[in-house]
Amino acid sequence: MPETALGLFRVNVPYIHSSGLVGIGFSLFVIVVASMNLVMDFDFIEQGANAGAPKYMEWYAAFGLMVTLVWLYIEIVRLLVKMRERK
Image (cartoon, rainbow, N blue to C red; front, side, top):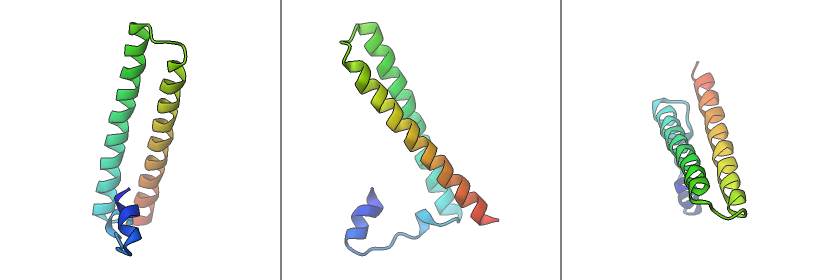
């Protein structure tokens, strides 16, 4: 998201997309954030089930879970690509 905002002003952010230590470290940081978001999604689902949330809330929980899983998958693939380019 920050690189998109900076891209509007023609500012290049090469380090976070490179296969160097900064790029790999950034990818690891994003994977940790996505993993914590996954834990929060499961907590939301559990709290909704315990509280007896309405039926339509299942769709919100499932959609949030799927978005987080796709995000985590994409970031893991990006990390693997960066690590492969490093060799």
